[in-house]
Image (cartoon, rainbow, N blue to C red; front, side):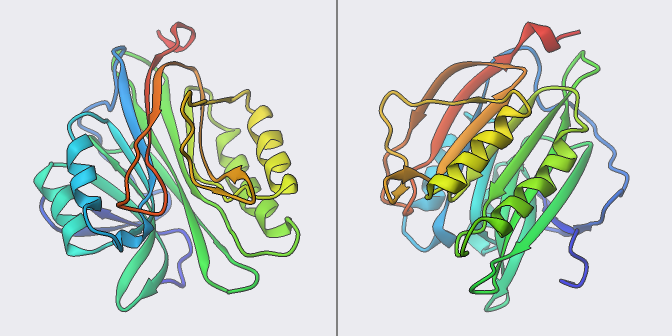
Length: 262
């Protein structure tokens, strides 16, 4: 399966697993968002190694339209959460460990109209990181919402692999004329990485979500997790303090910018 770099695994309430390939037609029954406020949760879930992580997801299942996970393992508790809350989860496995897939996962309330998956191998440890773009319809609008879920390469000398992974996303995002959310664990722990990241988001006129009480995980004094956006208005943003992962979840509430409303 891993010979096809661009597949995505989809989990739904039926407990069935679907293999989604590039350019596969997706029939969408309902839009993800309308012109009312909506919330997203962004979290590196640390492969569900710690107790209570699923309970955190349950607390926010009905409060969010999107949950963007990094280091998500396709374990029974997580798949049961998806099924019990009638969610749709698109998963891009970066690698397989003990027959369990690990990678970014975007959990939503409705199907995307299209999606694009990405994998980039870590130069030193040779284990991949993954990223996922999902595109969702907006109620009563010709525009669509692009959501990019990112887990950036971490162990590298220099920024060549980091830049390459960013450019893979860039090539897809630049084609999108509409609202955008770009979020995840960017591993921007060096000055060079942080510079590249901000250079990247500025090129698409993305704004950064700032937190009045910043409890994001840091390394070498720099935060690793970010939320960027375009075509939206930020209402509120907070960080949830928890011991259920080595990262704290980021929670943001948005509404559509009137510029993008038809």
